Length: 183
View 1 (cartoon, helix red, strand yellow):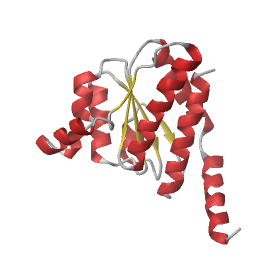
View 2 (cartoon, helix red, strand yellow):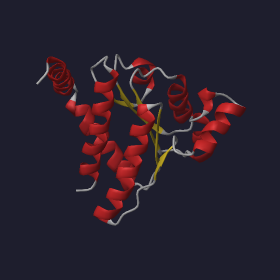
View 3 (cartoon, helix red, strand yellow):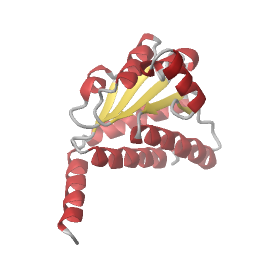
View 4 (cartoon, one colour):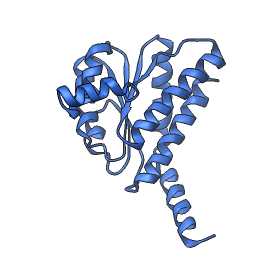
């Protein structure tokens, strides 16, 4: 195996070893509680994090319903391109998630933001808007956690400054959560 490949695996394994596993367990329990209380779960992120947030909702919606017969009220705020671009064009890119949250979010729903740096203005604004509306917030972040780590109600922090390592683990978190909500 080339040194580059081994280095990547070593860095990925180190980040996995250093994640606070209790924070993952708390995130799973939080998500389960929102499902059981029939609340909406909203997700958002940018770039690869947008794709992860969409992937979560795809997996969780389908898998939860097939496994339990129950309803899962999940919405990725990234998936309606018309709405995202309307907010970006007509108001500002910073409002693409907050604007949607103001429209569909209700007290005791859950917002999950996915961000490598934790500093994207639109996800920070989504958290602040959610908190004003009584929506619980959970951040999956990397790097030093950024502003999201400071202002979210709950966090899972990936201790890495490598965006691809953070993205790999963010996807893994989605699969871990799916397996747990479906048992």
